Image (cartoon, rainbow, N blue to C red; front, side):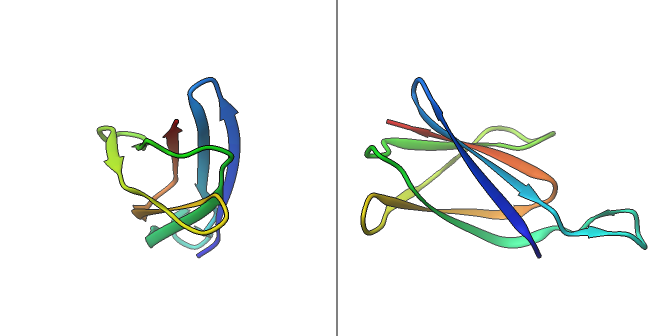
Amino acid sequence: GPVGVNIQRTDRGAALHVVNYDFDDVRGCTRAAVGVEVEVAVPFEVSSARVYRPGKDTQAVVAVPANDGRVQLSLGDLHWYAIVELLR
């Protein structure tokens, strides 16, 4: 399903706002996006990453360095939205 990502600089690194736009009009709810993976470019080396989701405990995720200053993250399932904090 359609997932959108917006990146915002923060004092400690960056925050990714990951939003699931796959709304089911018939059921009146958002369909879960399964196996969500994100790759973004950041101007710093990521030391750690944490995921914040509504109603869930904060979860650490592995930020895998990719080419050209990019980083890859596996977020698993996404119901509504998540904020991923990328720390320097």
